[in-house]
Image (cartoon, rainbow, N blue to C red; front, side, top):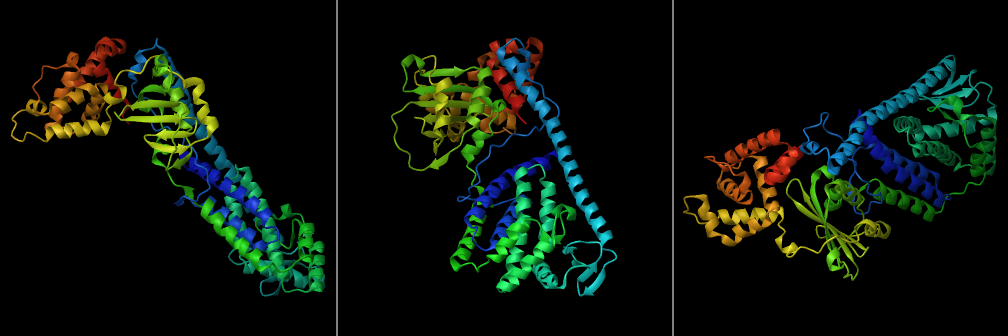
Length: 554
């Protein structure tokens, strides 16, 4: 049920923007045909009732930030929990508290929502049953028209077999306007649309804009029906119709949500509209149709997902292994900073607010640039930058981002605390580049009898892997943790692993690289149990990195 309620919350946010658009269009089209308003409210109903929608570049629905939902009900073993005395350990303990409370709060809200739905639906069912008892002794006048002593205003009751109920004491001169109005309701199928509208209101009762939409929908329903009923009447006929409205005016609350009453609500406004009715000009009708089409295109569709923006918006601190800050141009001793582990959540939160419109042709800027280089636990490396408080850059993709948000970076991240390491940009390996290096080494020589010969045949690629250091280790661990490394590349990764982590080499005869790594991992877990996390992080950094990556796997 929590998943359903979360989905409804998301759908209600998107529908809220459409409701606001319809409110604006109602004002702009105040002189247009009233049926246009009903079509616009119908679009709101479609948005509320449809769990899926198409994506469009023309969509005006703002992109919303996704909130990751808790997946695990039990907390896995946290290797950093051993560092209880460090700020990072304390921060992690603090960060885990809200996550534990999240599902409980969502469950409570879900039950409150369900209770509201049941109460509203129960209310309308009870009201409908009471009304049916009141009209049970009605007498058929003709066809679907019934006279009843227990009602004081005409209305339609029923969905599949609707009936028009008329008060027994209704003046004869008012009967024809009443029947014209109610038959117009039946022709327009309003006895279907109004209950459906109330059903959506019952589901989305927590959203105030949906209540406003339902109220105005019912009002526009009556105005559109009046318009249809009087469009062929002369001045005297419209006057008689208005008098009948005044005689039959009623409090809409007495008829619950479903019946369509002749004098229901906004009688003063309806009388004024009837007396001043003029057939809408063609351009007003055309404008109304165009407004409906534009609203459908712009608000029944969702914005096209941008993979880079979506990735950074949904990034979590647990996915980030390290963050480096680079600020250019800047004083030489303030160009670089390694972000401490306990500050990573703040960086991730800042980047989680990433937004902006894609830019195809970016302009050259002379201002300061602030860059975050993130290494994830899966071994991948990403860059997110602020160029001159004008562009947001994510892995080479440019976005025209809000100035106020970008300028906020300067307060906390406008400078580093040390010079940029020599060759910083040259030494960085990406996951894809590392995979390419291993593939190149494995490609030749074809007649080699042992894995070392492949490394000897590719000294440049071999050295590039060693220079990659921790990034190469992350790639190796990613591949071994995924399993199945029983071929040549598995042997090559084993050899490079031993070169990068000589303190952790095993004296082991293994038929495959995967078999070697599985034993290597088991040894690492034993060292952790024996010596603890703090000792292992200092003396066995490669094994410590592997265990962190292993623990971060879903």
